[in-house]
Every structure is written in C-alpha cells, then in structure tokens.
Length: 104
Image 1: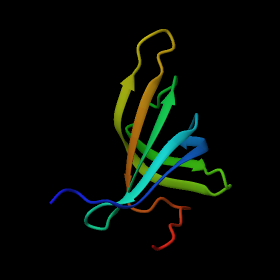
Image 2: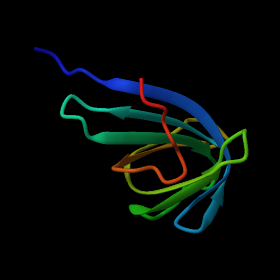
Image 3: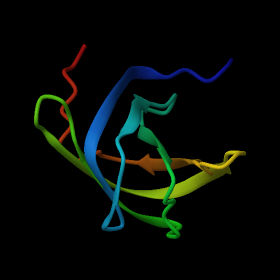
C-alpha cells in the first residue's frame, strides 16, 4: 500500500525568521503521515539564504496567529541568473506551535 497523508493544510506566513535571521514570506504545508505523526515543511525564496542547517522557524499567518517550530534545511536550490535567488526547503516534525487544526 502507498503512503497516505491526512489533514493536509497549505498556507502562507509572513514576518518569517529562521534561526533569528529575517526572511521573506514562506509557504507552509502541514500533514499527518501514514503513522499519524505530524509533519510540516516550509519553502522560502530568498536572495539571502540562511547558512544554518537547523533552527527555529517563526512566522505569522494572515489571521495574526504566530507560528514556530524546530526544523532542518532539507534542500537549497540556487537559481541561475543575476538575482541568484535561492529556494530553501525546511522540514519539521511534531507540533508546529500556534497552529490548531480542527478535528475532522
């Protein structure tokens, strides 16, 4: 049987920091894996990529809720061209503090 995820959410956050470094907004995905464990990832496109390999991600949702959670850098992809933007993908597991998901 394939991997099954439940309770998937995708949303944007702003006022983002990673390891205390201010970054542009991020897109966050949260879900429960096939074993019922909470997982989440965040993607940030930035010109000033963080040098850290892990740290605390913080941000604010559109409704004003503050979120935070410990994560690791899963991938960095540096774009071509003069702007040299980097896509940074962060992975977290466990609770993303401040996010309350209503039970189905």
